[in-house]
Image (tube, rainbow over all chains, first blue to last red):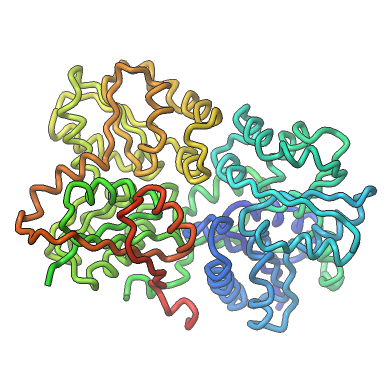
Length: 267
Length: 267
C-alpha cells in the first residue's frame, strides 16, 4: 500500500504549501490536517505550540505516512526537535527550505524575515540562514495583523497596504535584497508586500521552497496513478472547504472533521 | 468561607468585564480564567465554543464559586444553556445585560449590534432585544479585525479608523440611535467607533451593563474586607500579566497558568 505525505498547519494557511507539494508530486497521496479549533499558533507560547504540534503529528502518524511536513512556520520554528522524538520518518519544516532559498537568492547578504511573533521570537530563520552564510545580516519583524487580514479576505485592500507600510517601515531602511515570507498566509499578500518593499527586493515564498526541498526525501518510484487528497480539520469544516476549493480548485478531495481529543467532554 | 464570583473569557478581553465587576463589588472575591491557549472564540464553530466553555466552567466550579459570569460574548451567545446543565449556581452571560441596557437607551427602537462572527451568526442579541421591545429593529454586523487590532495595541491608530469606517459603512445608513459593543475587546475601540458613528449614537458597553445587572444576584452580605483577585490563564501568563496590569492597575492579584487538560501529553 502507498504511504502518504502528511502535512499539518494551524489552519487554512498551509494550503499554499499543500498546493505547491501537489503540483510538484502529482502521484503522491497527500493527507492534510488543519488545527482550525485552536488557530492561530503565532501568538501562543512555544510550549503550547509544541503540545499542539505533537497532537497533530500523532494524528497524521496514525494514518500511516512516510514523511511529515510541518507547513506552519511557527510550529516549524519551535516544535521540530520534539516531533523528531515521536517517529523515525523524515520531518520537514518550512524554515530550512526558506533559509536555503533566501541564501541562494541574496547578493548583498542582507536578508529580511517577516513572520508571526512566535517565529520571529524563536530566531529560527536567522540561525538557519547564518548556518549557510555566516556573515549574512538578518532582520526580523513580526507582522501579527497580516494573518487576520488574509483570513478576512482583505489581502488587496487599502487597509492591508497601510498595515504593511507600518510594519515594513523599518525593514525598508535596512537595504535588504531578499525578504522571506515566513508565514503560510503571507504569500497571499505578496502583491501588497512587493508594492511596499519595491521591485528590487526578491520575496521568498516558503511554499515554493519546501516543494523543491522535498525532492531529496521523496523517492521517485511512482506508478503513474494520480495521488489521493485527504483533508482533516479540528473545526469549521464548511468554511475550510470553501477556502480549500478556492485555493486548490481541482485538487480538493475528501474532507472530514476530526475531534483530536474526545476526552474534552469527559473531563 | 467566602465563595467567589467566577469569570471566564477566551483571553484578555474579559478584563474589561472584570474591572467593572471589581469596581462595583469591592468586597467580593473574584476568580478570572482566560483561555489564552485557544483564543479567539469568535471565528470558531458553536460546538467548539460550547466544548471550551464547559471546560473553562468546570475549572472555575472546582474553585468553589457562587456565581459564574461568562464575560466572552461568543460563549454567552451559544454556550449558556449547556453550562446551566453543569451546576445550579446562577450563570450570567453578557447578552441579557447588554440587551437590557440597549432597550433602556434607545428612543427610536433602531439598535445596532457589532460582534464576532459567532456572536452575530447566533442572533442572540437580536432575540434578547426583541424580547424586551418586540417591535425593535436590530442590525448586526461582524467585525472580525477589531479583536486583532486591539491585541496589537492599535485601537487609536489610523488603521483602526479605516477598518471601522469600512465595517460600519452600512451601519451608518440604518438610522440607529444605539450601538451595542458586543465583544469584550470593543470598548477599547470606543473612541474610534464613536468617531465613525457620530455623536448621536449611544454606545452600550457590556462590561458596564453586566456589573449593574449582577446586583440582582449578589447578596449584600459583605464583611468590610477587601475582596481577593485571582487570575488563571491557559497560556502566555507573562503577556497576560502585562495587559492585566495596564487595565486593572491596583487590582491585579495572583496569577497562575493552568493546564486544563494534562492528558494532552498522555494520549
